Image 1 (cartoon, rainbow, N blue to C red):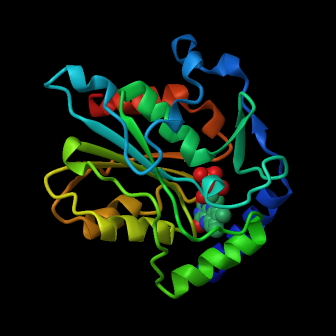
Image 2 (spheres, rainbow, N blue to C red; image 1 turned 90 degrees about the vertical axis):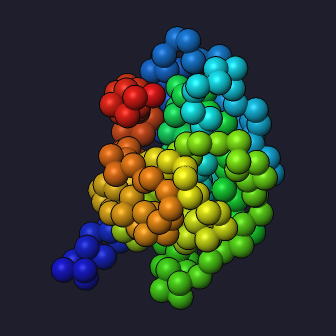
Length: 238
Ligand SMILES: Cc1cc2nc3c(=O)[nH]c(=O)nc-3n(C[C@H](O)[C@H](O)[C@H](O)COP(=O)(O)O)c2cc1C
């Protein structure tokens, strides 16, 4: 069965490798958010920035952390189907969804970046990621959340890699103790859905409350995720 899944995934990755990036029509974005198309760049460095919702002292303080291979590789934005062109800026799927969530919740963005520069095209990337997983590696991270105490709720976003979290996410959860905080996972994928990742995160962070109703979107629908993200956030009370 696993062999069959691997074959299916290999075909899917081949499909991805032959695809082109998707241009996001700016009309798909709700009018009140269009001005903030690049909201993701605040707080993506060493320190996340001040919370937009900090003025409301009862509001949970939110961080939206994400891993995007497009920011950790030499991805060719034109040839890669895993890149969205947002107003001229190339973004990974998970980054784009992270930006939607940050914009809708007023959370700060934090980009998980690795020392490793991943291969920029699909097949070498798939092989590299598989080897990393088989060897249970923990790629070194070069961005760090310096002010974790400032946050109550951490949204954590990632692509599904080989049916689970990319190994960079294992490095991320090794680095931080989220005891007492709420972790809300979200992912982008090409058919695997959430791949059981909320349960994996719950095992890695036993002291945290991990939301099992995570958001999972197929990469083919990521460019159009605004309404689904809004509905999901509504279900969770945000
Ligand atoms: C190394 C690698 C492994 C992948 N493994 C899976 C998988 O197991 N299941 C799946 O549905 N999609 C898989 N995908 C597809 C990605 O999850 C999908 O393209 C995702 O939207 C990429 O998001 P990003 O642009 O943020 O990197 C894989 C992609 C890569 C590059």
